Length: 194
Image (cartoon, rainbow, N blue to C red; front, side):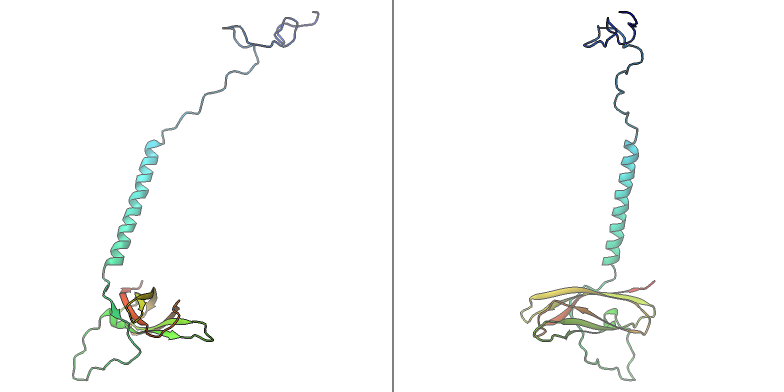
């Protein structure tokens, strides 16, 4: 056919050549080759392994430090909460013994603010720092009925109390009544503030 170039189109008459190419023949010039293979993996296996191992080790160290701080130097005995009544004073002739950190919690009691059959009961406390340094106080408590059944428990925190300073605080409860309820301190801790 006049004007037809056999190199364009590849067919005998200049049209496209459909169907498979003969075995072993190279693809015509200017055509696409086979797709590239999958990307090669980079050598990240060991770096990732060491990074993950380091992160796990750091978490373990942090957990150990938290456990040591939480367990060390605390009083785990259960004692009744102090009432608002005054404690007996030492006579002038008696030597004053150093007070325990638990004695810093002067008062811890329930305050019933309920009105019109809507329960509104709070715990209120007073702390006086008897140590020679600024201190943080944390304690856990429980409210039990006359039969010894725990009705509620909680944790309280008072921070940055200066030596000799008195701090007061309060927290709401879910108790429905104060009748026959007794407060117990189940854990008490005083630590130095920074």
